[in-house]
Length: 97
Image (cartoon, rainbow, N blue to C red; front, side, top):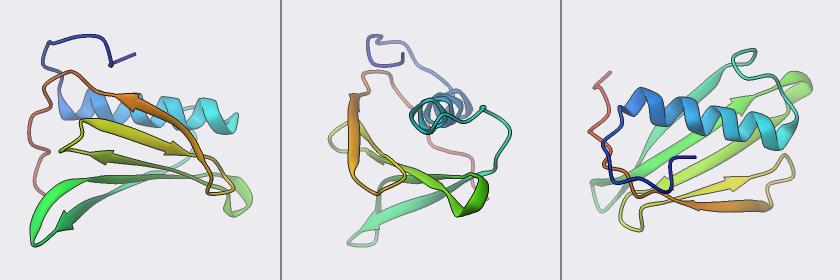
């Protein structure tokens, strides 16, 4: 779990953690299905990220990372909030695409 450390982690480590958590929620095997990531902006400034694991039969598991609240919110396949996870690590800026 990332939530209990003050150390810095790479953005890729954070993305893998989000993917693993989403797969655990949906009962999927991590690394077997594609995960997309989108930048979320408010007022023209980045405020977080939207993650989506695209499972079989159009199943989608999503998560939203709120940079201001330092919180990741996970949603199940039905779109209902499943769990919240505080993030106390320092995240570097994501690589530019």
